[in-house]
Image 1 (cartoon, rainbow, N blue to C red):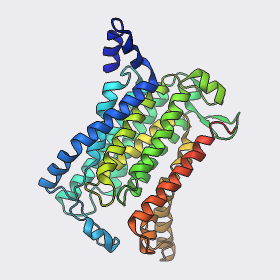
Image 2: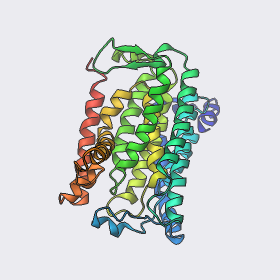
Image 3: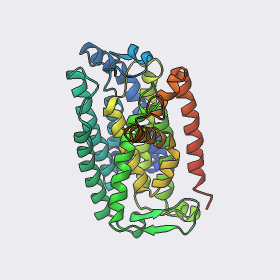
Image 4: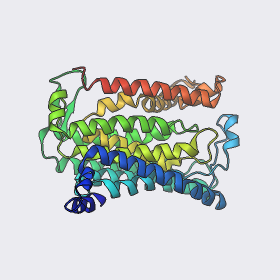
Length: 360
């Protein structure tokens, strides 16, 4: 929206031409989302508290989590509002990728909202049944995958890129739809499972989004893409602005979500942010790299899968509790220690992921 306006103003005042640069709009988008989060956050928290929209804690969880009961939840709405507002202001709204990513963000946020709403109204930690949640995730994930496949303009947009290898490009055909669907749904659930401690999912999401924003900028520039030997994806660079909005919104939310949290993201935020990371990685053709950078999310999800399989087959649990961050809590680690150490691990994984851009 503002891109068109500043483009018009640039005909009269040359200084407005700076808004045509992706890098500048990414910075402005980040600051806009951060400002919205910080300004709207206190009011939203008061409203959530006033209407008693509080967290429902599982009885089987760590005893230290019982004190979290009643903490305002559905705070993910603050993140989504900030991202959408900054995106509409500073992105090129003629770019199809922007609308696909926004669509995924809002749709998965809607699933999370329904889940959180049911938890609150029913005073239960169950919420939306796993079957119904997965059904709607599948519907929206499949739609996004089909849209990306049918609108692809170059072969590179639907090929699998293997990191660390120069010529490892695998045409997927219709397999692209399956891969995209799996990435979106898996990352959505993985981030949701990670969101169990104050700030645990928030900062890693920001870190991964920062790296994906850089990849999007490089992949959308033919010169940089050719130099780094990564696929050139026309129009993908605009997603850097959208990732900037996520960075600002996430940091603003972390201001209130850090231990002890004043507000909790809830499924509304976690499902949406995970799905957004998945679809951005698909667009820039770095799905495998996302699994490296988001290794924390992957391990959290795998720990739950392994725990369930082990218990059903042998009647024994591998971890004291899953997801794995609860295992460390029950080993005696204070919550802030678990969170910060996992932040550090994520930073290392993000750096490893970024190294694949040059190590080929």
